[in-house]
Length: 144
Figure 1 (cartoon, one colour):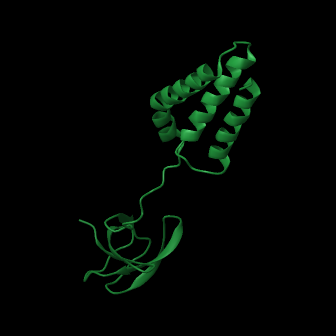
Figure 2 (cartoon, helix red, strand yellow; figure 1 turned 180 degrees about the horizontal axis):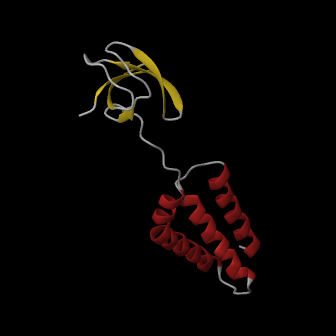
Figure 3 (tube, helix red, strand yellow; figure 1 turned 90 degrees about the horizontal axis):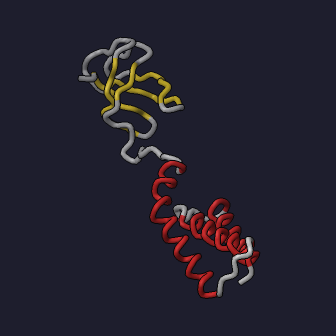
């Protein structure tokens, strides 16, 4: 295969990982291996077709085994696991809250309704524990 064929294949694989598919960085390393194979041909090193494929396969496998995991962990966006919700977390109140009363509180970038589910009034500035989430209402109680 001509060197420019390897470069085109490499660019397509690399570009599809970056723009279209999330293949966990596998296509990046396969594309990079194709580009390196193309560079070998571009610099005048002539290899038989079978040797080009062997070089490509070895480069792809070695690069993935040595670098993919570390690079993927560094570059991927870390998503917070909010599936369980904020239950058990501690927040600080901005105002006094009597038992059974509710107020508005800014938390995690949005405004929530907080309700004192305990039997004791909670003073402004006290840390409280989120005991339960009911819709968009945080049920709170005294923090231990």
